[in-house]
Amino acid sequence: MRRWIIALMITCSVAQANAQQHPGYKPVADVAGFKQQFATASRQTQSIQCDFVQEKNLSMLADKITSKGKFWFKKENKVRMEYTAPSYYLLVMNGKDIKTKDGQKESHVSTKGNKLFEQINKITVDCVQGNVVDNADFKTNILENAAGYLLEMTPVNKQLAQYFKTIVLLVDRKDLTVNKIEMYEAGGDNTTISFLHKQLNVNIPDATFAAK
Amino acid sequence: MRLLLLNSLLLLCILTSCTNVYKDLQQTPGDPGCITQFRPQFDNTLYSTQVDVMKHHLSGLLFIKQMPDSSQRVVFANEMGFKFFDFEFTRDGQFIKHYMMDKMDKKAVVKTLRGDFELVLLHPDLQKATVKKDGQFRYVVVPTAKGNNYYITDTACTKLERIEKSSSRKPVVKAWLTDYKNGVPDTILIRHQAFKFNISLQRVQK
Image (tube, rainbow over all chains, first blue to last red; front, side, top):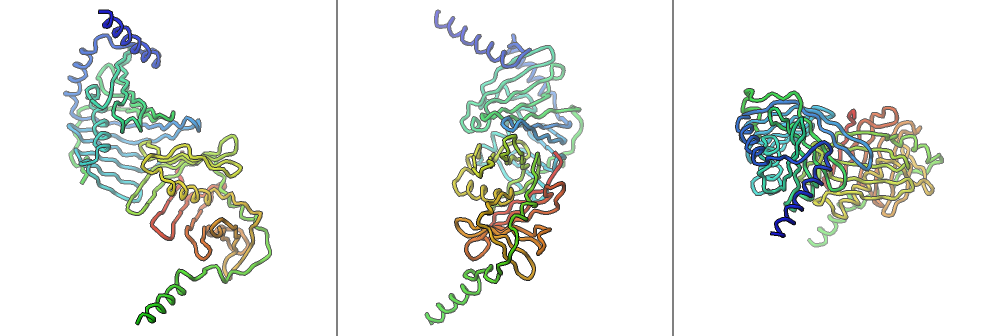
C-alpha cells in the first residue's frame, strides 16, 4: 500500500514539475476523456490546408532563422510542406515515399528499410493528425489551460533522442487541431512551426502529394 | 613494351598531374594586404545552400554571424531546422566545433569544411605572403603547411577573381566570391578539384 502511495506521489510531483515548465498550464484532469475527444476529432479530420511559419532559434547565437510556407495534409498519410521564404524547398511525404526539391535538385527516397525516416514520417503525420499520444516512441504528458492543450513528448527511442530532447504540441481547444509544434534539441536550440489560417476538410487533389 | 608503357606514364604524368601550374608566375613588388578589401563583412548573413558530396546532395540554410567577441559562427541546418554543423572561427585563428551531426562527424569531413570556410572568411596570415603575377592576374601567395593559398585578383587588385588552395603543384580547392553588396558576396562557390565536393551559397534575405 505504502509503495502505491509513494508511486502516486512521484507521479503527481512529476506532473506538477512538467506543469511548472509550462507556466499557465496544469495537468489534464481527465486524460482518458481527452484522448477520446482527440481521437474523435482526428477521425473527423480528412484534410488540412494552411500556412506555416517556422522559427529556428539558435540559443548560443541569440538569433533565429524564420521560414514561411504552405502546408497540406490528407488522410491517411499524405503531407506536403512547401517553403517559400527565405528560399524554396519542397517536402512531400506520401506513405513510404518521400520527395524533396530544392533550388537545384529533386530527390526521391523511400522510408522502406530506413528506420529514422520512418519515425520522422510517423511523427509528422501523428503530430498533424493528433495520434501522437499513442506513439510508442514517446512518453507523453498532457497539460491544459483555457485556450488549449499542451502535449509534451519525450523520446524513449535512442535514435530520436539524439535529435530531440522534447517535442511540444500546442493543441487548439476548439477543434483539437495542432496550432504549434515546438522541437527542443539537447544543445539548447529549438525549432517551432506555427500553423496559421487552417482550413479543415477542404478538397485537396491527390496530385498535390505526388512523390514518385 | 614495358619501357614504352613506363615512358607513356611518365609523359602523362609530366603533361598532367606532375606539372606545376604555378611555375610561370613571376615575383612582383606589391602589397599583399590589398586582398583584405575582399574579406566579406559578414554580420548576420543567410545563404540558401546546396552541398554535393560524391553521390549525396544536402540542401539547407547557412547562417554566418559576427559575434560580439569578433569571432564568427557558421551554422548549417536543413530547411526543416535539423542542424548539420555549428562552427566557430575565433579572432585569433582558432577553430571550435560546437556541433556536428553524428553521421557527418568524421575528422576528415570537419577538417575539409574548416579549410573551406577559412578560405571564404578570408583571414589569411599575410606575414610570409608574397605577390606574383602572370599576363592576366595578380596572385597573393600565402604559404600553408601543404602548399599555398592563392588569392587571385585583376592586375590592379580591384576585383577578386577566385581563391585557390593548392598543393605544391596544383589547386585542390577553388572558391569564387562574387556579386559583393555592402561588402558581402551574394554568391559563393567552393569546388574541390580531386573529388566531387561542391558547396554553393546564394544569399537570401533573413
